[in-house]
Length: 135
Image 1: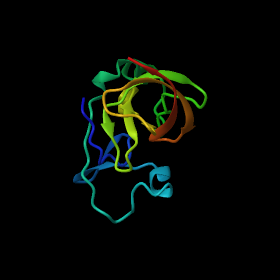
Image 2 (image 1 turned 45 degrees about the horizontal axis):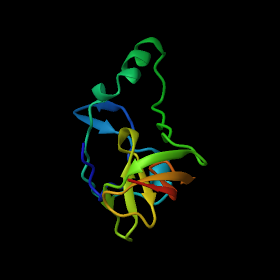
Image 3 (image 1 turned 90 degrees about the vertical axis):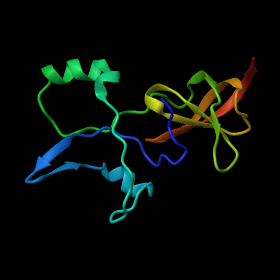
Image 4 (image 1 turned 135 degrees about the vertical axis):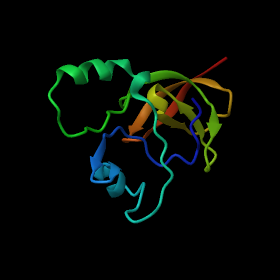
């Protein structure tokens, strides 16, 4: 799946019915971190949960609750081998891992495969430092 560089945030949420319309709730942290502004108009893309079969089976057995923010698929200090797919607006390499989660890799070029150490983790992206260049 290709994800646009224009992606502002990525989260899971429930579609709820309200009278004659359906509502998608945006997590508070997406507004608080400055990723989006209330009152603005945004283009929304919906991705089927069928790609993530583990969630569907667990939701059938667990009691309903408020939608929770998915946890980033990486941790600070974790090392990974990634392939740089794009270059961001500021010239940094962009790699994508599980669920399209973005890892920014300064100094990397498109097509490079590098070993990185994750140095910073946010809800919608992480930053990684190259620790080994691979071929």
